[in-house]
Length: 80
Image 1 (cartoon, helix red, strand yellow):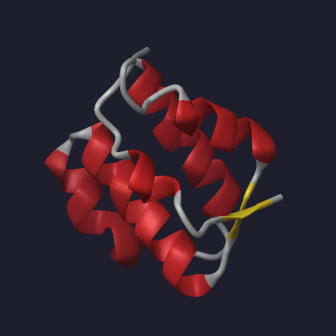
Image 2: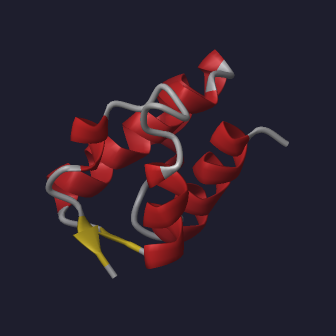
Image 3: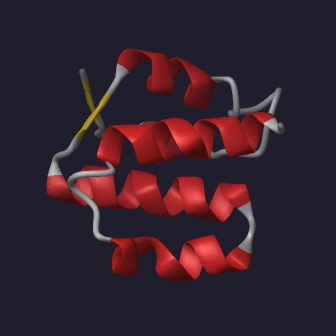
């Protein structure tokens, strides 16, 4: 499993009860875990939804130089 898919699954776990399926349907259809991650992060930020600390650590691993996730995508998130 890729580190992107693993991070997407952690976000799905954290936000499952707060995010409707329709909110992420297009991102899931893209089959690109990075797009799904970015969608979940946008929803979490906009709605003030908490992200667990283990998920935040996994997301930090996706930022440069290790990955392609823009560090700004993590700004403003409520970490639990």
